[in-house]
Amino acid sequence: MRRRERRQRLGGVSRRFTLTLTCALALAILSGTMLRSQIVSAAERASFYGASMNAALSANTPTVTYTATATNTSTPTATDTPAATATTAPTATPTTPPNPYALDISAAVAEAGWPQQGSNWCGVATVAAIADYINPQAQVSQQSVIYALNDSKNASEWGYPTTSGWGPYVPTDIARDFGTDPRSLAEGLTLATGLQYHVIVDTNGAWDTTIHIVDDLLRTKQPISVFVDHGQHSVVVSGVDATSDPLTNPSGITAIHVWDPGGGVAYEGIQPQMEMAVPIQTWLSGIISWSGSDYFKYPYSANVYEGEPLDPDPAVGPYAYQPSKYNHMWVGSYVYLSPVAQTATAALNADWELTPNGALYVGYATSDYPATPVGYSGPTVPMPTNTPPPPPPVQPPKPRPVLPPPPKPTATPKPTATLRPRPTPWLFTTAQTSDGVTPAPRAKPVCAPVSCVLDGLLTRRTPFVIALALIFLVGLSLAAPLLLTDVIKRRSQRVASAPTDVAAEAPGDQASAPTDVASDAPGDQASAPTDVASDAPGDQASAPTDVAAEAPDGVEQASASVNDGVSTDGAPRD
Image (cartoon, one colour):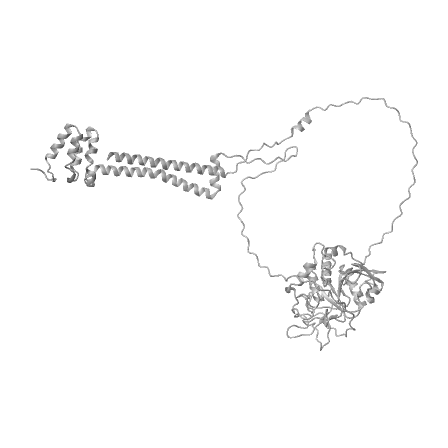
């Protein structure tokens, strides 16, 4: 019994020692992890604040001054001075004064990527060049212009016609045009420059149109996009040559400065060079020998090719051509684009077209749209119904470039979650030494192990929680063996003090009890028969024999006397 208690006490101590060793190992690993997580930088060399050593040495060390020793020098012999040679003054080169009636748009033309990048992109190229001249930082390209014109949201308020014949080429057209019609280019200029442009239709001939073009150019200081070659081509007019002020004396105009986006390119341009000063007679009525085309010899024409018009009148809106009314918005007139308008018409969009004097052309009302803008009260003129002249010869058009895909609506991006900024642990201040040298920032100091661990626990949330959990487990592991030992001790005392515990044991275990008693010290043997006497009746007969075989004589007699008073079946003897 006591040996069993001794074994239990030794087992409890072993378990307690094992748990304590495990907890200590866990704490060591945690401390090492905390230390390794700290950024430890080696201390740099201390920066020097103050005057440099070289400066101090140069200030305190006396400078050795050497005295020059006079040497005998021979006196130079005088030489004859050569007479100055007369030089002829340079003749002043006569300079041509800048033309006050012409604009230099060469930089804008280069920025717009001229020549035209498509066989039918002459109007697109003029829009890009004018936009880049007005705003040199805009960097408007031909691609960006065609991209805007191919966007249906920039279409007319009347929509655009169904596809038939040669067009429409872009959804901003209101005519079935092979390229870009006057309305689409007016919309393109409005989008590219931020100014409101309109289509100007002049029914009074080439000379009247030329005077208004020059007038708008000189008043606005902006180049003008003009439809030439009876509507088949677009050019930019940048100025004039004149013997007097063209604004007061238009008859003094001797030449028109024309920039052709296809100049020098066969079957695209109409003049052999990109920039030319075209004589006024050639501009008004001549034929260009290089291409067989013209500028203003013929008015705007439908230019029928293979049975279909390349440049027809509008097909939608109040300006749509109606054969019964014989109304022609463009055909038979001279057309250009201008930002000049009267107060009443200045706010109208690019759909509504004006005369050179700023009056609004009145269209034909239908159930879908009115003849004039709602609420308009400015000057108006009826839509032209003049009979167009015989159609001029038409040049076969070159294949058109494929349009880029129309823009797709872009989804509004969801707001991006912003990370919370982490606090900056180290702040560096810039200091300067007395000699003006900015020292290097001081190194981050190396912290002590304990402070590093505490800093890591306080600034990092996850290690802090893990450390608290480990501390709780360590405390629990230290307290658990003590509680368990106390429970085992109390249970052992309860078992030792209860006499019925041995009687409750199994019969098979009682036979060995006398052997254990016999092996104990002599002082303890006197109580062995009493323990055996309390065993089960079936095992009591053999117990005295075993004790007598091993114990001294005195013990045998004590055991015999006890057995004499009890019968073999457990009943008292008489």
